[in-house]
Length: 239
Image 1 (cartoon, rainbow, N blue to C red):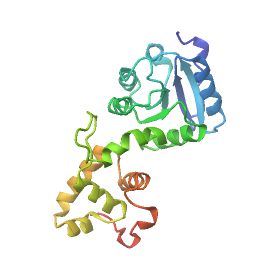
Image 2 (image 1 turned 180 degrees about the horizontal axis):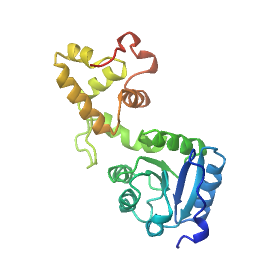
Image 3 (image 1 turned 90 degrees about the vertical axis):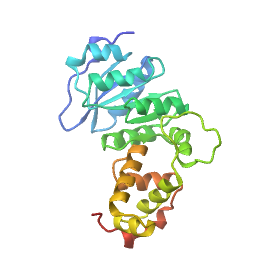
């Protein structure tokens, strides 16, 4: 199924996010388009049945956000989109909910992953998150992936894109999420500040996060700490 020229809509105002929707099912494309049309800061500039259609018409498109399925084309579609539209954020909207599919999509360059069974609220939350620079998984997708990060006690873990968190990494995650500075963490763990900085940077890369706020959200969402346990008195600026 090829995208029709009429589906490539006129550009919206520069103040809104330009969205491109890719899905093999017309009803899904049209349904998501209607949903997004209710948001003043989002405008759908086009929709197509395949990634190939979009790559072919790349010169006509300049999306800020691409919402795509991977059910048919697989994660290679994500890689093609990242190459074809390097400035765009890619959010996967898929029927596939296996851990392998989710991690493969993220490894291929997707910024977020939402299951098609998710509601409007979850989809919009994911859109806001990825546009804000944070990787985002819907609740069910997150449950598939995160348990492997936090549970390193399994005797024969299945192959995965990312490895489980070590005990040391979980301890550092807990302390950073509670507001401790690198200097304070170094003092508690008996390490140099430089060592803690390196370990913290490696932890963020491993989890696909960019800052302490992301680590805190991750820790709270997955039960590493409770929201009320943040040590406000420790929230000093890092060196």
